Image 1 (cartoon, chains in turn blue, purple):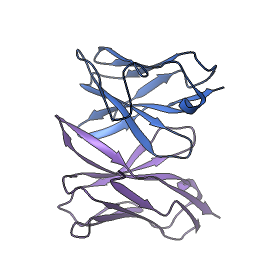
Image 2: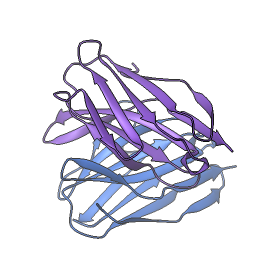
Image 3: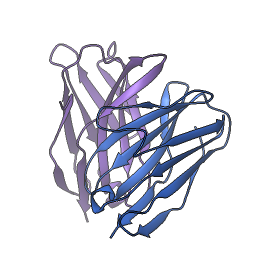
Length: 112
Length: 114
């Protein structure tokens, strides 16, 4: 398995501001993933982050809106930029290990 | 395009009953089918998974049935308990650029009543 922590666990932000979410894994992993889960909805992959290279974004998500850093094999950040109420969601960090995908507890973001 | 369809959206089952959640997929390139359980305020946790060369997998009270020709799979929870009340997501994954890319179903909110 994998132990994944995220900070902050929740936040309330004002429109137009930015929030950076941190993800820490208990041991080294090659790939880290960021998902969005809108209220009562399924999980949508935002991007895949590989250490040492630029993140790969899914259709509908762009780097200017969701910049990602991956400075080492156990840590990643996702920034939600220029937030609007439509960005209110749970943001989940995930890693793949031995073919299985494991999730962090999520960051619940509310944008006013 | 929703590649993994899940039903029902919500389910209420009496304690001790059987909970059944169904999923269907379209892309035959999918080669791994996990189920996740999510409690409020928590991230999804892997519950059980199956590969398409197996028709059934059982772990305790949880069983996956898989029908490759119909491109359907289902989760059965036997002797359902109030502690099983959660949202369940089926998923399908395939190798994409060296990693398993996962597509999730829409989720089923299960409530087990005493």
